[in-house]
Image (cartoon, rainbow, N blue to C red; front, side, top):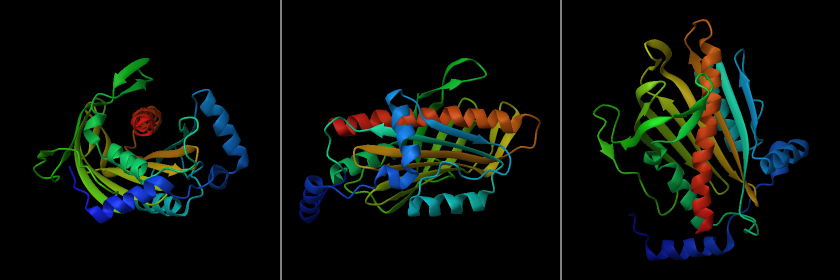
Length: 269
């Protein structure tokens, strides 16, 4: 447990009382898409795009830091598969118009708690049923010896953070990943990158450093806008791109559900 110095406690209490300035949803995705997304949220639905040829972001919010973040990642990877999801998490009725520092801390600690991904499920289109996503997931000290570590816990979110994790995926096997986090007054982002090759059974699917998953959480006042994107340079095998694209889409939804459950706990406290 990280100890909070007295001065930090005072600062935290001020932020907890007054909160930060939220970014209006309409300014991030436009009035028409905002209305559409709010209507979808009422029905428990979301926006999604799957691209397999010359992909470019179609759902990316107009948030300067996020646009820069995703643009740099895409330019570095040059993906052949690009899957995006846009989801609106509605805060409990009557909640303050912007998150407090305590809530921001709670949400950040939730997304760095990688052990809690163990056992989450996603819908497998090929099997027509729910399936375990990560059989195991935990933070490790480094990619070489992969010694398990407890999930980190922060008194205030650092602006940048690097974590390494070992995750056993029932589709793509036992792999090592690098997680990079960024946090600001109205956002929390992270990107996951594979440091080992991902295989589908015995079939090579994605080479090392050729996969990225981005998750961005932006405070919009009465809700949280969540943008998630998975991208990869997939193996050039017939049907592999489509298979990976469908898998990524279902897996992003599992991650969004995982985040939503943690957000419920944060806003219930």
